[in-house]
Length: 329
Image 1 (tube, rainbow, N blue to C red):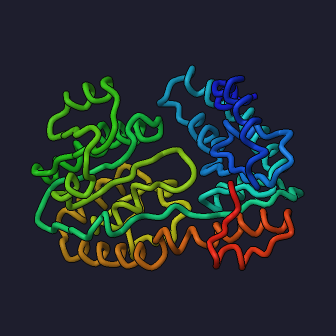
Image 2 (image 1 turned 120 degrees about the horizontal axis):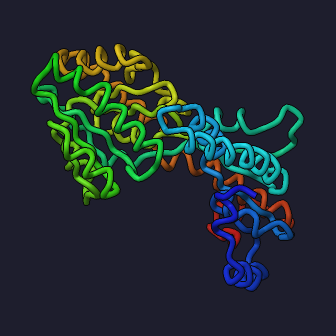
């Protein structure tokens, strides 16, 4: 059993779950760490995986910068995760991932598992368009306790930002979101690096930004930070891994960068060319409004889940949805 699953096993939770199940028409497990509690459940069951965690760990094990011990730990966990994730989807009526990349990585060619891809969305009304072409602030938004974000931030600060500032001395880097005390102290030693920690409003904190970055070198699923950048109309530079799972295209909605030279060139291009940044900003906002509203993404999934439950109990899903007599899940 992977550590990701074993760490969260709790007998009190398992007992309470068994008490609750008979009163419901179906059950949705959030993340693989809860899926193991439903191995004997006879109700229609859905596993909301979000990401293929095994993909994150597989990629993380290849980064030698993380140290030999960390790489070995990642590799050890990755092997167990891939076996576990590939097995557990066979025991659910429906599993949900946010990216086709994750689905294709996870499923064996002979797998008969039912896996539905539902991308993450964004509330565009809470993240209004606010491109500022005259600034020199580069932002990173995220849960900055997550290992892939920590790695990306340090990579940008150590390898990219000094070279950007050699071309544009006004440039500064602003890290927005939850952060550990250790990483905060590390970043506060750097010139022109601002750390906000958790904030009430991401939109307000990002208002001064002219460029947003997603220098993720390992991970899986969809990077929500990119959806937030696009919604806010902040021109973005991202790695190829950061772009995965999104319909955003290089040179149209954002800019891709892989090598250090590419990162420096792309960031400086946006700092120095407001017209280029403005075109990307408007294209990105249009993409979010057209493809990534929560209502557009969630309704097909909602119908899929209710159809699953209704088919098991002989109900008519269309009638239950239209009349809002939804199954109890």
